[in-house]
Image (cartoon, rainbow, N blue to C red; front, side, top):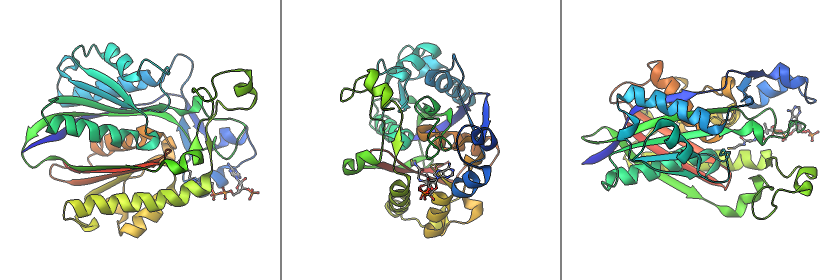
Amino acid sequence: MIRAKITGTGSAFPDKVLTNCDIEKLVDTSDDWITSRTGIKERRVAVEGEYTSTFASRAAENALQMAGITAAEIDLIIVGTITPDFPFPATACLVQNNLKASKAAAFDVAAACSGFLYGLSVADKFIKTGAAKKALVIGAEVLTRIVDWDDRNTCCLFGDGAGAVVLEAVSGDAGILSTHIHSDGTYWELLHQPGCGSRNPASQKTLDDKQIFLRMQGNEVFKLAVRAMEDAAHEALAANGMTAADLNLFIPHQANRRIIDAIGKRLGVSDEQLFVNLERYGNTSAASIPIALDEANRTGRIKSGDIVLFDAFGGGLTWASALVRW
Ligand code: COA
């Protein structure tokens, strides 16, 4: 049986670090509030001249290097992002150009924080059907460019960066065992960016009304996130005849430590099974799972044969899971 196997991982970030103490100088908040309510201590922030494609391309180069293949061999590039360099062309096309991945088809997936797992699911299908042999799936965001730095409810939550994986068609037991993706558009208003699309095109009004920034009803999102991510995890395990006890590593979307702990508790996952690094990066949306995966991989937390579960939730609403045998 042909499976899509992750043969390389990579990540990339801005050098600039913004700590909770730095945010205390911008809005009425405290390190103590942010740490206790979210688990976040600091985040990376892109500076002038750095874009989503900058980090996406660097993360992809690192993943290609680990896989030991060249960009010219890649058939497909998918970038999960809601902060593309431009409305069009796709950031994936800019990455293709940066990498000189001349034969790759390239497109973006807009599924907010579930974007990487949506991309992984699409690439998995391309590989299983034989339509592609080698693919790059990237999650990349520069969310700090759509954050309202006067809004204490949101400005402390998000950060910038990118993570990438190389997928290759292999025969055998290792690779992606399943992916599941879901959406519920009835909740679209809970987390969205009102301006700069066809409904509220860029204008003086969109600037004055701060429609260019993301808006979130954090409390509602919190409750729905816990429920949807728990369901997605159970769905992935059940589809493969497994339980949480079979997991060597659980890598959830890194949005909020309290969301992660609530899901971990409901699933019965131990601290040893759980991977968390949001204290250093904040919520990097589509980038959070591949960034965490790259760190887990490079620090030896994943061994050949391990069962790894990815679980995400985001605006849309969207949610998704993927189960992998490493
Ligand atoms: N510093 C200090 N106080 C803050 C604050 C900040 N940075 N942000 C919000 N507050 C205040 C609110 O104004 C509110 O004050 P009020 O009661 O006087 O109105 C109070 O804290 C409680 O707000 P609430 O929204 O109930 O807090 P919370 O415990 O739900 O935590 C979030 C807020 C945003 C951290 C939390 O809801 C959350 O993480 N939601 C999910 C967000 C997320 O992960 N989104 C992406 C999903 S992919």
